[in-house]
Image (cartoon, rainbow, N blue to C red):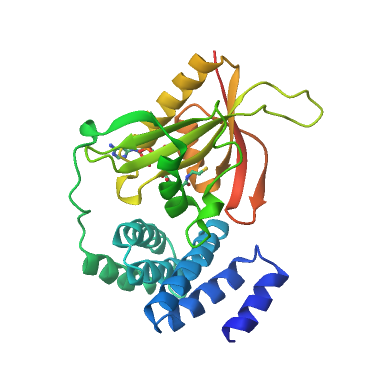
Amino acid sequence: MDIPKLRKLLALDPNDSLSRYALGRKLWEQANGDPAHTTAMLAESIGHLRFATAVDPSHLATYHVLSRALLDAGLPDEARPVIKQGLARTAHVTEGMGKDLGPLLADLLASIGQHPAVRPDPATVRIEQVLPEAVIPLRHKVLRPGMDRSAAIFPGDDAPSAIHIAALSPTNQVLCCATMHDEPYTEPNSPPVPSWRLRGMATEPAWQATGLGHRVLLLAEQLTQQSRRTSLLWCNARLPALAFYKANGWQTRGQQYLIPTAGPHFTMIKPLT
Ligand SMILES: CC(C)(COP(=O)(O)OP(=O)(O)OC[C@H]1O[C@@H](n2cnc3c(N)ncnc32)[C@H](O)[C@@H]1OP(=O)(O)O)[C@@H](O)C(=O)NCCC(=O)NCCS
């Protein structure tokens, strides 16, 4: 099937992970024309493939194509964790279910080197309140790849009450970010509870799992309570981030649901004492 047919197929069900995979794969395969066109095709391909892995993390071929697309787009630091996730999953499947992708992924990882780019010690990273503009590029890169930059700007970002937090390297590169909006929490058949909503939580891929997310959440919580004390915080959390939030004292509420641009989610709250 060609790209226009695959687009039509996806339009029938934008949440279908196999349609996303098929279109993402085709865009990646054909992204070898003039540089401007290639960049746009790779960006779109990456967006579809990331969506496909979020909806169906068990489809191993997606990890392979997504990591190739990320490498072609010149994003080795983003490809590395994708390859590692794919490798971890190939270890648990049987022959014919994608196990043959294991050696391919291992070669890919070796080709970009096992070691992340040299980075400063996390102890030199400062966690600070910043202006809204500072957090948009990292949100865009990690949470809305392949989409227009405007998709990374949320209503209320410019509100005087909004609190934007960043983890900053010694050269002021934003390595992790989060935003707190003064927004009530609501549950069906209950009155709204005054609260703060966490949005745009993202860590630069090479810095994930080094504790920055935890530190950013701590300051976010502290600053909201200094600004206006509430009994809880809330957020719409992506499925892959659930363990991270739980480890930081958050709890899921209600059933899982799908956000078409960002995959499966749970609403989560953090009760405050
Ligand atoms: C979810 C996300 C924001 C977490 O940020 P982070 O900076 O990686 O968070 P931390 O480093 O504090 O913790 C992440 C994990 O690393 C572990 N970790 C923390 N410090 C570590 C260290 N020094 N060494 C090894 N592991 C460590 C934590 O235990 C945690 O594990 P868990 O997820 O099982 O709880 C980040 O992974 C991310 O940007 N993901 C993609 C975007 C996304 O899903 N955002 C959330 C939208 S709702």
